[in-house]
Image (cartoon, rainbow, N blue to C red; front, side):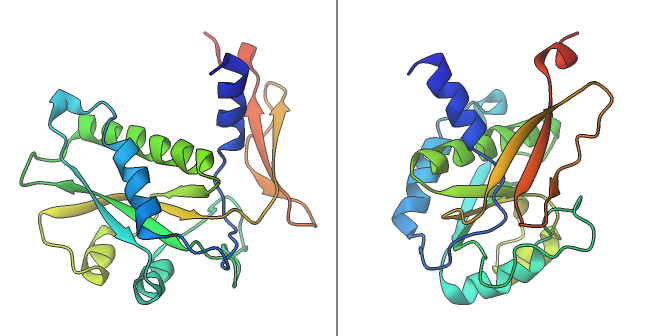
Amino acid sequence: MELNDWKNLLKSSRSTRGYDEGRKVHREELEQLVDCARFTPSTMNMQPLRYRLVHEPEELQKLQPLTKWAGALKGMHLPKEGHCPQAFIVICHDTDIAAAGPGFARDVGIVCQTIMLTANVMGLGGCILGAFSAEAVQKALELEEHLIPMAMVAVGKPDETIVLTEVERGESVVYYRDENGVHYVPKRKLEDVLI
């Protein structure tokens, strides 16, 4: 893969908050996402992360209301009705393998990004979610006590327009939507992030 192809993949792998509900996500696709994620580095190679795949309608109906999306968009409830993800991967820390700690939190981030990039390659999109009650998710999915939900990745076919923009030093980096629902994601310039 050429460097420009890789950069384009990174630019096109955005946090999607609107999905085509007509495109179902199948368990086999979710398994492929996790299969790629399991090859990522892990703190001390302990590999304490476990993955709960959610794609059946009754479980989606339990899980979706427990999530919070796009906190920077005050007064806007996303995803909009009829545009919800058709699957979630709930990333859990298995305390039977290792006690949770900051190193393993980094592992969660690496895994989430790997799932997002893989989904993009598969023609899907996703959104990494951390705004939820771990206890509520654990209860809704009837997870055993030693499986602690750390993050979720919503998965589905994107059904929205997302535009990256570059901002000048000192300008806001808060994402926003225009009157047509186009989602803008301001990014700092390279020279502004280098020390």
